[in-house]
Amino acid sequence: MNQFGFFKNPTQITYGFGATNQFRNIIDQQGYKNVLIITDRGIVQTGLIDQLTRQLEDINFAVFAETKPNPTVTNCNDAVCLLREIQADVVVAMGGGSSIDVAKAVCLMATNDGPIAGYEGIDTCSNDLLPLIAIPTTAGTASEVTTFTVITDEERQYKFTVGGIRLAPKWALVDPLVTKTLPAHITAATGLDALVHAIESYTSKMANPISKALAREAIRKISANLRQAVFDGDNLAARDNMLMGSLLAGLAFNNTRLGNCHALSHPVSAIYGVPHGVANSILIPHVMEFNSLAAPELFGDIAEDMGENLAGLTLMERAQAAVNAVKKLSKDINIPSDFTSYNVDESQLDRMAKDALLSGNVAVNPRKTTYADVIDLYKKTIGGVAVEAI
Ligand SMILES: NC(=O)c1ccc[n+]([C@@H]2O[C@H](COP(=O)([O-])OP(=O)(O)OC[C@H]3O[C@@H](n4cnc5c(N)ncnc54)[C@H](O)[C@@H]3O)[C@@H](O)[C@H]2O)c1
Ligand SMILES: [Fe+2]
Image (tube, rainbow, N blue to C red; front, side, top):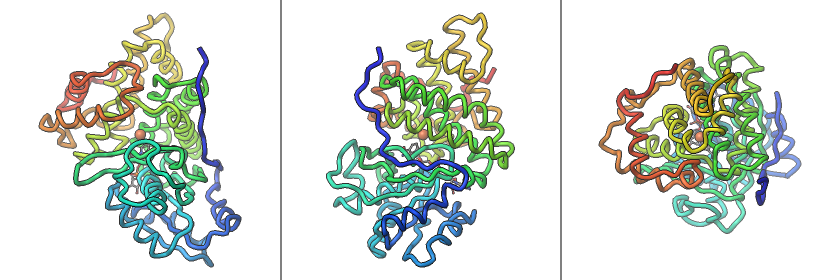
């Protein structure tokens, strides 16, 4: 049955080689006077921020470059101090999901009182946010178009989400050229994150015909281009297809939420500092295997989109082909198959499972999930019990 209420995309997207150059036009058209740029040190080192600020010669601006991967409440507090110091009337995020997520939190804190942790949940703030221009430099999170920000509370070692239509950036300038400097290992992990977004969105209980079409095209683009982007970073066609794949996946999951993989990955990142894309990549084959019993036909579609030869296979074999295709892709791009190298052990299992079950993503996962299921899934990723790619 084709039925759903509302497909949202509040962000004005400009896509293409050189899209970043639209930045100054927006500042001029809107008459902004004071610009806060939010990024991280890795991006500064690439020279991308210098390129951006060259467009701002006669404009007052400041750069906050202290964003950490899995960005923190402290990052948000520090950035908002700088925002108030320069009386910014617009924020620009140039970076991966971490920089864009800090920028969203800062835009919220600029117009709503109190700490960012007080806004955990959906539609929790009452005032419109300061406007945000998002320029993604990873083909991964698609935070440039999503209505969420994910922040780590260092004290609680807990990753929380703040969401709602107000959180969407006003503009996204999506430019494959700025992803060219991504090192291979970050291209790999962030690219797999984008694939997980597409897979979880496609199989979400909230999927609808529009989100499904977007997710399938994202799966096709990412699975056909990720290896090339990792092993030949100068391949601009691959970079282009990866960034478009990530964007399409973001438009999809922004409307459907995600699933168990993201629910389980956040506690691992919050407690052990595992990069977001790596945590998802390690968990996803196990989550797919778990979910394929509930929705084998959907996983069969994913295998088809990943280019697997499915002739003569049964329904369950088609679903398993999707799991194997993801494992093979992960292995080819050198992503670890378990959390051993991150020292994740069983000591925090109970806490991780309880935190995972707090995520709104569990409710839309295609298979009902209990505490015992979550413990079981985590155990498969700890200490070398991960299944070898076929
Ligand atoms: N808001 C959302 O909708 C959403 C969705 C998924 C994930 N997330 C969050 O996003 C965060 C992860 O973001 P991410 O995976 O994009 O990574 P990231 O922003 O943490 O960046 C990872 C590293 O890549 C480097 N880097 C980024 N772009 C580069 C470039 N072009 N050249 C060279 N180096 C570059 C950065 O300096 C950094 O060291 C996590 O906290 C995750 O929870 C948010
Ligand atoms: Fe993600």
